[in-house]
Structure formats: C-alpha cells, structure tokens
Amino acid sequence: MEGGELPWLLVNEVGGIRGILHSHVPFLKKHFHLITMKEFLESKKDVGKKVQAIYLWWHKPVIDKELLQSLPNLKVIANSGVGMDHLDLKLVASFGVKMANAPRAVSSSTADTGMALLLASARRLVEVHNISISPSMEYCEADILGVNVTGATLGIIGMGSIGYKIALRARAFEMNILYHNRTRRKVQEEQAVGATYCRRIDSLLQQADFVMLVVNLTPQAHKLIGKRELELMKPTATLINISRGAVVDQEALVAALQTGVIRAAALDVTSPEPLPRDHPLLKLKNVIITPHLGIKTDKATYMITEEAVENILAALSGLPLPSEVLPS
Image (tube, rainbow, N blue to C red; front, top):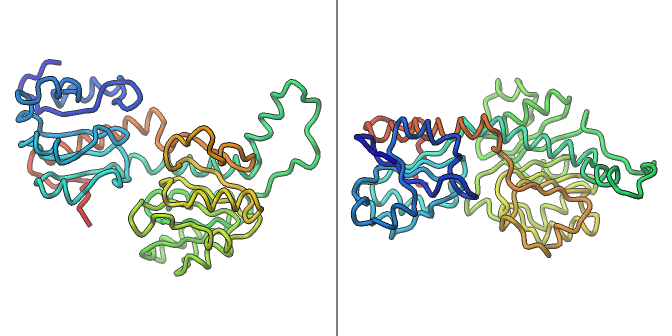
C-alpha cells in the first residue's frame, strides 16, 4: 500500500469477518493511505505519528487509551453505522479527537430490515419455510395461521431517521402508527405518516400489535424492555428489535415467549452476538433471529464508506463534520 502524500487511515483489516470490504478499497485509496491494525502493530513506533484517522468497521479496531496514546496526530474516528455505544466518547474527546457516524447511509436499509422482520414474523415465514422443505411434508396444517399486518397497530420506540422511515413504510401497509420518542416530532411530520405521539411508553405498549425498537443504546435504554414492559403488551403482540440487543432483558423475553405473555419476537440484534448455541432463544419457534443484517446491502455499505470519507476529509480540512457525534 503506497502512501504518497495522502493522509494515513487506520482500519482493522481488509476482508475477513471484521474488515472493510474489498470492493471499498479502491475508493478509500483514492483519498487515503490505508494501514491495517496488523501493519500498524508491526511498526507502531514508525507509523503511529502518521495516522490521522481511523475508520471503524463493525466496531473494530477497539479504541482504548493505549491506542489513542500511540496516535499523537489522530484527528478523527469515523464509525460505520449510527450506534456509538462501543466507543467511550468522553475518552476519545479528551484526546482532542472528533467522532462521526453514518446516519444518512443506514436509515433506509435498516428500516427495510425492520419491516422485513415484522412481515416474516406476522406470516410465520421461517416456520412455514421449514415445513415446506421438510422431507415428510405432505400438506400445511390448516391452523398454521399468521396475523394481519394491514390495519394493525405499530408502536415505534425511537422516532429518529430510521424510525421515521419505518413509519413511512408502515403507512403503505395501512397500519395505525404510534410512536414514543424523547422529543416529539413536528405536527407536519406526524401528519405525513399518520403517526400519533405517546408521551408515555406504557401507553404505546398497551395498544400496539407490533412494537419495534429503534433506539440508541444509552444507559437509560439498557434493558428498556423488561418483565414489566412485556407484561404490558398484548398477548397477541410481537416485539421487533433492530436497535441493540441490550435494550431488551433477554431472560425476561424468553419467559414471556415461553408462557404466552407475548405472541412472538423478531430480533436482528442480540446480546451477545452471536448468542451461545445453547441459548433458549434459539430453541423457540416463535422467534426469528437474524445476524445484525440492518445495513447489509451492497448499496448501503458503500454509502456508509462514502459518508465516513466525507466526515474524515472534513475533519482533516478543519471543516465542520456533517455527521459529528459529541460526547453527551
């Protein structure tokens, strides 16, 4: 990887489980000299002063005090997603390093994932797929019934850019839309999607047929949905989580699903990821689990890298970052 006069960008690796995608490398190399963590660790003393930016892909490389101390000229860390719960924002800021995420790039694909999980759970698609491919399959039992989406009530917890795009999609399915958010949306925005604001989360939980979690993981959101909240939901309701696994008390969720407190759950996120292979959630028929697919489309991932580059170049030029994240 020849550097020239380009600024140095540290990435975890290229390819592999936690590496930037091979297809993104030519675009990144137009703007930066890329160095992987392996290359950095092999010659830390020589290259540490050259690195000005880090691009995190799936939370890697891990940002800790030791790494920050070894990069005296680091200006910015760009994250490949919205959630920043894997970063100690105050620690990073204490080194004078700016941080950015990629909210514009991820919102549509994550909203699509949320609606896909809602529809798959409602119509029991995974369950009936397994029946359909079974060697002993002769016919589908008449009582394997799903639930209606059209006319049902969707409760969205977290009405940021992703939550709002979910509301837009739900409106096309003629769903009734409730939402709970730290701040209420403008009346015009509510009217555009036919959404009703619930000041109290309890009110939303009691009314919704589908509850979709679209919140950032903060200390306040940790186990936001626990035993009490699940018991407020309808026994016919479905919980959909596309935020972070730790937003839900998974032990309480297992109990609720086993005892009929709620009908079903569809989870794109768990805690940890992946779950241990003997975890009870993996054994329940009324659960769909996907491996954090939210942003995983070719277009969305490329847009994330484009947004990261835009933020990094702005930081290195002393300009405002389009998607800067400040420590709370």
